[in-house]
Length: 321
Picture 1 (cartoon, one colour):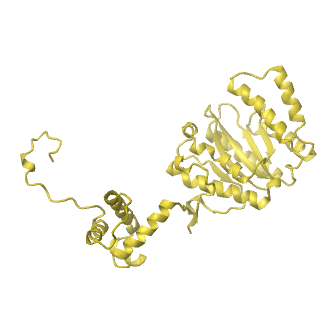
Picture 2 (cartoon, one colour):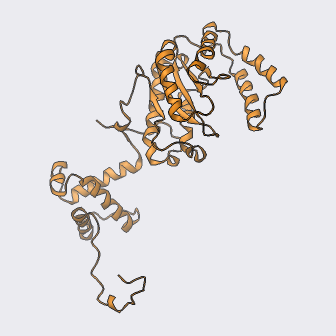
Picture 3 (cartoon, rainbow, N blue to C red):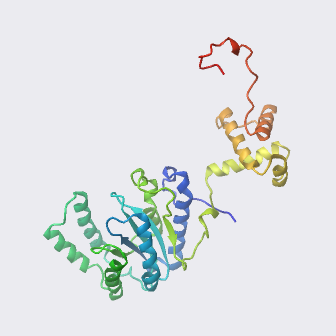
């Protein structure tokens, strides 16, 4: 079963994402939007898990599996996990979780922004926090919310997560979603279009995961087919190629040109692009019919006749055979 879906975020620079990651990026964005739509914006929160120093991706995922099985499932009914790497090539986890209470109402996002700004400024300057900055940061942290349930979860995360191999100083951060689901999906997949962050992503690493109880819109990543203008243009041209060859059905094309007949039509499209440079193709012209038939029969354009004067070229000539 194939699911055709268009990219859900029009402003997302999908052209900067490598081809091997585009399907995973679109799947992650669709699942994030579906997750927030299912549970509601007020019952969704953003959880960041920080690993200990010196852990690679394999060790960090082992810690995540243990904490998910033994601790997180008691706090959150379902979640989506995204792996991200910082500028020091250290992995950490971003989780979109659903909560049993509405933590968004009454949360002071302005104080949270000021608190994060203090830490980010010290991080950019590669220095530790000063005493006044620590005092201001502590005051802002204590005035983020008055919800006792959220404070109780913060306490449990600080107490339990270091036992599973996460950082002892700041193992986790749980905050409600400030803006909307689209902004969250853009943020969680931002590393895939950043040339600086792409260098830290290991080849073949699985960066997107969901819990067993998470509602999925797309069961498997391999089921997704990205509906783009280029794909629609290829499908239209494939129909025209089938009509040029005699209005053949899929079964007839498979019988005449083999099981990879769709790949042969891709070669025809490339040959037509080289000849007409995206100008309208005269489909009824005899030479176009001959070109289509030639590529479908041989898989490539047959070279022209051999020049009878090739033997006159010197042996060391770059044009000699």
